[in-house]
Length: 608
Image (cartoon, rainbow, N blue to C red; front, side, top):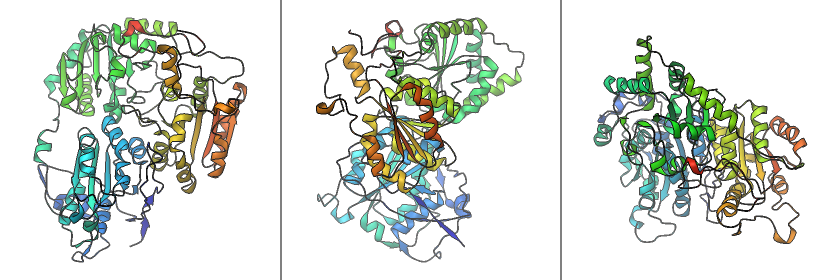
């Protein structure tokens, strides 16, 4: 039967440490063209005899032919339906597609270079299977060349991890890893494989039993109808309800749309939840929290009912936890029981999958068509806040406001591009000013806040969604942390557009220096002090070195044409947008503050 080669993204990223030795990856795995991934059903004890994936899989090896552990690994990945493997772009692939991303690294420094990515995936609940090499079993614990105890290093930042000491365990471990990574609350799983296990010959047992009784017994069940009726009851009693939507809702966008149609309740979103409900809809109040809109934070502060779905009451959302939603009865729905009551005690809670919960609630509302929800007065109050406190920015001469650059990009792409970002001011402006129409358009390092995230995430997204427009909105500080990935973009000819909001500073740190530290600068200027009038580093020359088309724009009246050209140019393109470093991300609730402390005016041109 004809085969096709597994695509590879082969330029590993030193993320976020560019001077550390990088994993040297270049693998090619054959994949059967007609192999289809089907659902893997796991009970307390699972045999692959019932697995549709295994039943229809055609191996390249005769059943009784010995093969190396490396070949067993390849086939195990194929049996899970894997068609793409990466280094760090695995996370962007997983975020954009909803599938489990696979990354592979060598032992030692290659494995430790995965640590930030694994921590990021853990905090943002992203399904990743990370496969690392390890020194031979007999050398473990001897401080051998490129040995690191990566299982111990990553134990607290992975959902689970394995050290493969018996080659016959490998098929079972791979199946378990994919199930664990993608089920319940998703997260990263690491498999560490010693070199001698990779080279050892064996006849794999694909029908070996998988025992996950403890894990499966703790899986959230379908919510009982009596709990759903209780939620409907508190909604009927409310006068000022708000839907608080987080990253746990990304797989239930259609259910959310239906629920909002039934009830007419306004929606606020966390940074992770953007796109779950269209930001362009009139009932969307956009993002809440430290840099959320005034009207989103006003709604939560004034609400008498907060329906919190798939959220963890993160400190960047709540600020002073005692003052957050202090007038509201709180209903908390989350798949992870550890999140319920961890930061904010709810009045009503259900540990269940958000999608199943919403499906159940929507069925109840369909049955009870006589139920009437009238929150028009509340929506009118919030619309007044929208009119009084819209998102805004100032223009100074010909300088390009960074917010305006994102606004223009939103208009030219109709809010339908996949946007990745680094971390900093540009990240917050991208969250505020781009109007995401659907889920998985927005890829950003939310919980960990890892600079350098934007470009590798865009690479993964471009592979996952080859027909989509993928734009990395980045800051100059974040972008240069992984600038070597331009080689990957060029060699793989990925049509990624890179729009760099270049202010020659670490902008978010500068903003805090301005606001809270009397504008004392602590190495936040990224330019060349001896040539302050020059743009440094010269991103156009860097792009030229990687054979990527690039342009620079410095004037507001030239920006729209420059962005249009970026979007229309086939293949990759870098646009260096020069913006003032004095701009601040507003609104802003200072860390640990409350709604009453909200800041809406000022920038680096003022003194505080």
